[in-house]
Image (cartoon, rainbow, N blue to C red; front, side, top):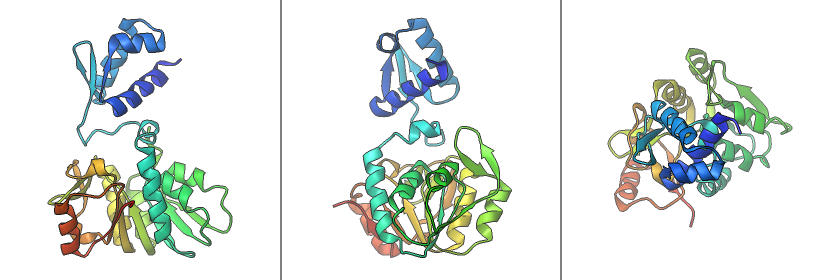
Length: 254
């Protein structure tokens, strides 16, 4: 097993259990404890974990992004439920922007039965997922490939979304706060999403329960700039009141 593959598996375990133990990982991967310590050193330097005595804990900083393939495996059931709700909001013939979040992959899978959609996206994986769908118009943004994220970013990406007017923008974020609104880990990811919202008649935010009451580095949108919120669990009463006051439609599984 390559060191990178092993570190990604350690990250997946950190996502699920919040902490790992050196001796247990050494046994699990059949390597020395020193090898595991080097793995944890690397994850600590990258800001993905925080070393502790005998192991490590997950770095909960919302401005730190896990690798795409690790994030995609987190809360799969919740993402599938949210994607099913989104599918019910999409109509045949819609023009849609989809961001490069891991949730967007599940949405792409869930809407494949729709007819004559136009999708504009900066997600390489969404494009691959939809490559076998007939009678759709799939438009890739321009931009620079962000290493490790399967996302296109930069001024060309922003310019692409500025060139189109769509019925629905569907985006996610790293944090969702009553005062700060929807936020992401960096301007590179936030700015294309800002332009998606500006270009859309209906602005849809998809965030699972873990993003509520969290604030990341770069602001995407205030609550007043959102029409619909889709999540995987019923939010607190404070959030429900805020959505009602702002005229935001809320959807979550029954």
